[in-house]
Image (cartoon, rainbow, N blue to C red; front, side):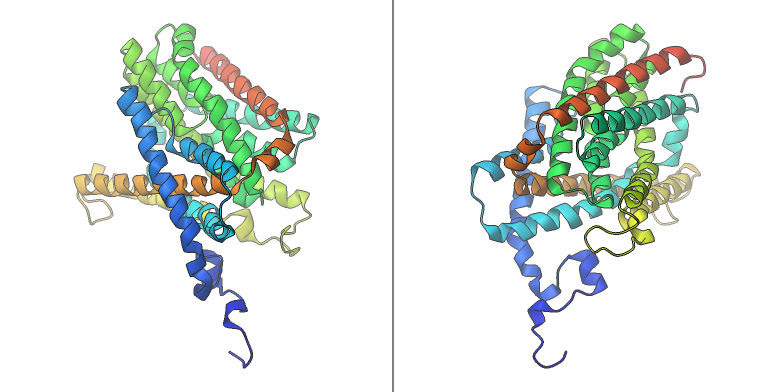
Length: 391
């Protein structure tokens, strides 16, 4: 280091930029805000379980801890004047903890689970995804809303709710407030669907567990909401197979995140003339296929290879027996979920109602249209397919 250079103002190394977003000697300033986000995440996880499991008596709460975290964060951040010293930690949670959580999410998926759904399920999922993307984009432009906000609502509705928003936001340079608003919209309509769709599924498909499960898996946004609605349906109508079908169908939708996120990044890149808005430089390939998406895919492949070893009578990755492998990927899934709750706590704490209010009610119109369209298209496509060879 040359004489006179202030170590606190030196440029970040590549490792520091990717891991911390700041220089190592300035990293302690991240701790206060990160600690607050972690505390709020812990409270949100407890509250989600208390409301859904203890009070409602369900096996899994239909109210996601992520939902609780962002809503509580918004309330706290807008009713209490938080110290400015907390902001770096909130930003770290949103940008770095979020990406790590997304990478670890890949361990949830196995290509063998996807195959179990059957080839006839994929057209229903594709129809729902394409409808949501197309309709949301059209309505968003018609209402002249920010394009990135429309993209976030579209992927949240069509793919996997909050997770898709969290994965897409960094790839298209979305603002934290846009992400928070999109999460709120997806949350509102997802909760409504969780409460209404189990009964709608029974009315539409006359107790057919396969088609009802497929409907719940394609028409509801977030993974936790799908499982909650499927549990309600299975418990009320004594059709447990619907839960299995809904869960695996949701996994099929989650797989498409690996396609839609790079596509959204590429589309955004074309709209900005191939430049990174924050630097003005040419967008790199890593921006079009973010590292966290590649990590997500790598974990999914790892899960599939491990499962293949166990199902073949051997050890997962040549190391662990089946019981140990199940414990390992279950633990990773739990960590992934917890990290995303921390990230969303940071989003809520760092967002302001004044900014959300400036967007008006129009985004909710977009979200409502997308949610209704996905539900209608899903039910129509399933009805046309019938039960021949389904799943």
